[in-house]
Length: 238
Ligand code: URA
Image (tube, rainbow, N blue to C red; front, side, top):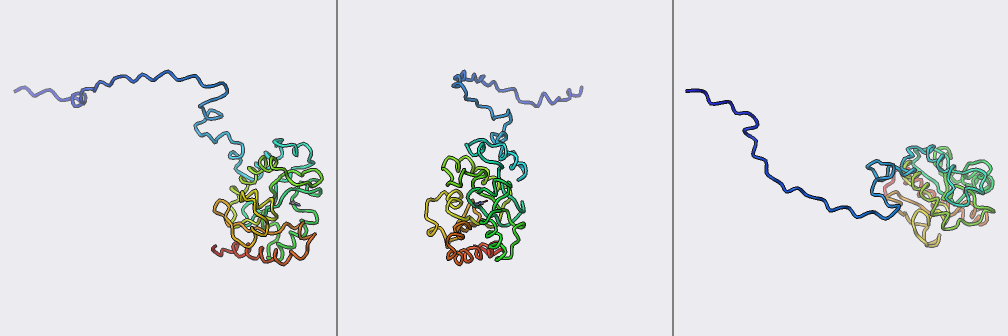
């Protein structure tokens, strides 16, 4: 008997099922200025976000220096992004640079800054071992209070700094810092004496060093607050 012809792979393949071709409905034209493509042509919608693209604090500092999102970018002498250990377990956040900070480009180097250095020494932390920055990265003229639009324009830099550093604890000095980080409107007295959370990170609120220069009797409660921050820095679970 003649051998049956060898089956080929094609013989085992099921007959193709006929699928009715799907004809896509013609896309409605997009309004002018709207694009469905990710910015920059990538498939990651966030790839073109200049802050996300900053992988280091130095890269972020360059973006901050070029920032003109609010009027302060044009009136200041130097931007003051912040300084210290980029891997620190503690980030100190103040309000905005003052005159000396504007002249030097460094945070907390005037009288309030000297007091901050003392406060940190009192909890056995040299200032080089922490990261120090402000909500605003440019000086408001005449040291006026930050305006809400300036805070909204500048806060993304602070959020990205905190994301890059990944501290174990944050010390918010003064109401503007606490409000920017906690999205709260509460008074400093209401905010003190609690461990808050900023994106899961413990956050302690205390007086701003400039306030301590005006009201030295607030130093005692400030020491209490920073000692709590130190305990969390040391690993105490909260
Ligand atoms: N006050 C602040 O809030 N930040 C500084 O850098 C200096 C003074």
